[in-house]
Length: 286
Length: 219
Image 1 (cartoon, rainbow over the protein chains, first blue to last red):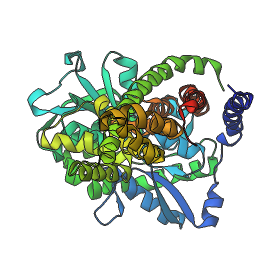
Image 2 (tube, rainbow over the protein chains, first blue to last red):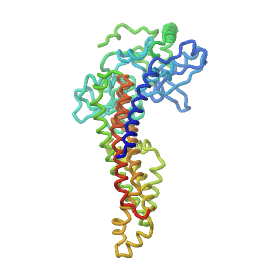
Image 3 (cartoon, each protein chain N blue to C red):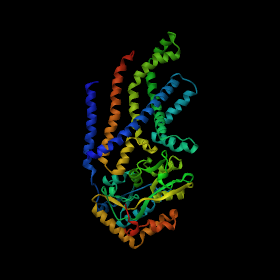
Image 4 (cartoon, chains in turn cyan, green):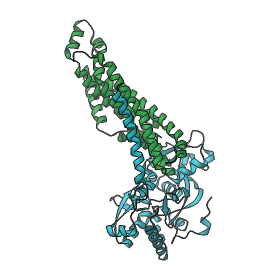
């Protein structure tokens, strides 16, 4: 081997590691304050584009859903234009930490691990985990799963973290997007799909041949908007806004506009959190 | 950067590296076979098959691997053909790589002077013998640089495997970031593991190229 090649190899390795070292300089805490957002006239909000009925793109190419309904109102009350940024579950924290978005409104479940990385505002929805499976082999308990059975999860969701922690023996089939996970379940690539129960209930309602065998799993959690760690001006404004919206029963209106068609009236009081106040019975966590 | 975090993630990356290597090399092997067959068909100017081969090469060279994997994994089950993610990964890489390898072999074959084949035939070799013993060794030598480039390209293409739920290096890093948000550590390990996988290939490539050079003739 020629000397130049050996040197080149080391240079490649050195550049690789140096770049990463330099990366840490930009990694933390780039955000825009409330005033900067107002001044620029545009707010960047991260939402899902494939998670119906919470955040999705409709046939006209417009963002719709429960999260988007709130985003629209936030934009209106701030008096700025909204630039929607489509996110995947696993990149939500990154988008905030790198300042690519000002707020994440992508059905983001509040967890202690995530709260170390981002700041959560007051919650606007309740959630637990659920498991949906085909009618001909309904999974009613995760203990019933055979050794060969795989469970679909979406990378970066609370369902994934929960199963990794509590059921380490279950073989997980991971996808990064909702669209792919759903197609995989429809194609029969796995025994079941574990995700937020809202999502699996919606899936079973919209797709014939599937049943939610486990409607509630793990702890009762909440969903809240998130901002970059330390962005206090924006966080304070969001909290005031959510409390104020509670006085006009905004989130009930949101439910009726976006979720009623999917879930019917029965789930309204279970799902909606009004004014950031979670009912006492639902705050139990593990 | 936290050392404990890196140590904790190492086994997962190691597993991902093994899976990436396994499927990557299966794909490279298939690509080699497909490419050689295609180059042979084109070189021998076999009617009908030649058209099929050209169609295959153009189709796979001009569509992204992502689309090919989507098709193999999500569309085929709709018509009753169910393939495992590993098989889809290997086959997808093999089909994509085959199209590239075919082109590389072809340029190698074209670099062998026609007089070589004519001389071999006039010595009484059959066309197949001439191909195997005279043309192919020289064509292969001329193609080595291209082949190595293709191998590296194919191994890097494994980074889109997340769409078919394969825990390759890229997806493992993304997945860990999504769960535990240790971005710096995860990305550092990612770069290091890709280098571990690919540096030996490029070094081996340059050694091979020099070793084989003495098979060259008339240049």
